[in-house]
Image 1 (cartoon, rainbow, N blue to C red):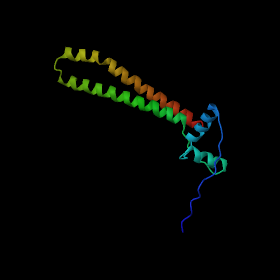
Image 2: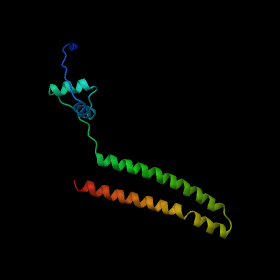
Image 3: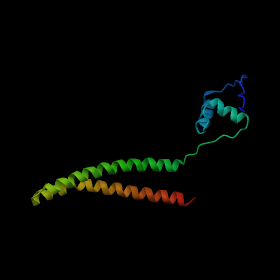
Image 4: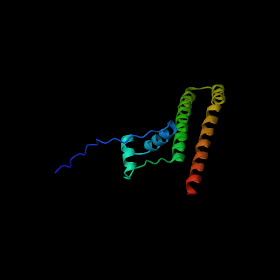
Length: 130
């Protein structure tokens, strides 16, 4: 036996200013409701509303880590190419020049590694206090 669908033939019209509408829309965007009408109906009829929750500190951390990962990949690729070039060198002066030219790459890699370590420590301290 199928449940008959009730037709919604009554209108409830409300007027909001721009700030009020933005606030309501912000609340709606944080829910799993399919439409603003569904959200408003559930709210007015005091039905449960499922709100999505995002951890802002974790989002910021993941964004920073993603950027650092991409930078580390680029530095690692450059360093890998430089090491391959080192294997083709057969004279001592060329090796010394290579070492001098690739010192900034090594420094950049170490700096990014220290950044990751610092961010991991900050995240651990922030989450361990809760």
